[in-house]
Image (tube, rainbow, N blue to C red):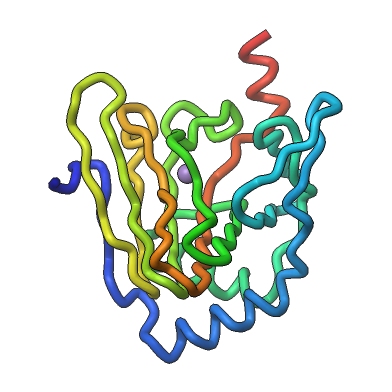
Length: 197
Ligand SMILES: [Mn+2]
């Protein structure tokens, strides 16, 4: 399988020592919420833990308002600054995912919530255990996979969400945790909603 042109992965964006320090701080300082959510009166269990952080005034429904919006921590701010300076792009939010081991996963989806605008540019950083990132084209049979190692920055170009689905599948051989930060730019909700209704 080969990479698609709308993805770019940059290894060693953080070196091994930095990755270890960042992973352990995130693991211990994120105050991870419970992963059991109630939607329309029914409970479901998310197969990973998540937190959501955004600039003041940024709201994001993220599939039925599952997540409270938190402020940026000093560590997340530092990481954002490094990513922004490298990409020469500004993000106003980050979704933090903890895959506690290979039993945690995310199924096929695109990061295409309305609040992200038509063609979202997303930067994704991996710390901790190596996991597979799989993608498959929405219309053709094309598919592929990238192995994401600790310290890798994965850039999803704006068209990626439009053309492809992605997932991080179960991987029962993985016993360690992986923390993934996906930086996003959320369009203010009011302007989005006034467009669509
Ligand atoms: Mn995603």
